[in-house]
Length: 293
Image (cartoon, rainbow, N blue to C red):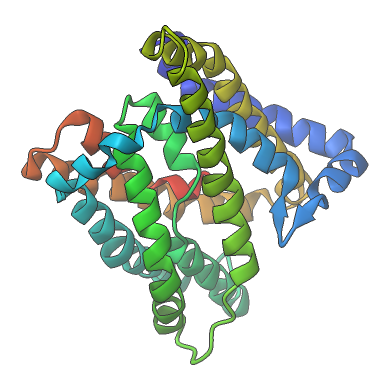
């Protein structure tokens, strides 16, 4: 592992700190940035995510996509974790913490709002960030694309019913525009850019060497995109973080437990299934990536 990957948690922590500081001292600027949205999808965040996932998209070789079906275990693991474990474990943790453990710190009405938010987060599918995690863990680019695509397809049919069941309501207002724009901006468009880039490079005499060189050159930009995204997200919420630090901590505790718990479950299942590292890595991380989006 390189120095960036080895100390990623440290760089993220530093960016969180500076994001909050910038958000407190330059609220008008970050308010303007936060309002640059299309269907609740922030344009600046989308650009930074493009920087993160573009190198991964260049690695995708459609001529070998068909080989993904020869090893379906990773896809099965992804589906099981994302749709049969994550939503229900998130709902259970939300109830445990905000209906039992944190009742002295949160009033009942607010507790229900926090539980609802956790449930929606647990049901939300992962899209862009898994490409970055897959890249950092040397995951199989083709397999990762199929994993994300499969989750997006399942989301169309499963998001509303599961959310409605866990929230205990009959009608869920699904933000279809936001989901559609997210898939378009974070998956479809960068995928098209990656395919076109690969096609151009394949016409050169050096082919694979040219592709490897381009990916190597873009890797620093991917890392910059990740860190700037963290800065922006925390700058957007800086005032709330400063004004309600206790609330942030209370919400963070079950989310951290959920994130590590889902990863451990997926990792143990990957070991049981004897998945190769380049398939197991993105399969284990895809269930946790939406907590970073």
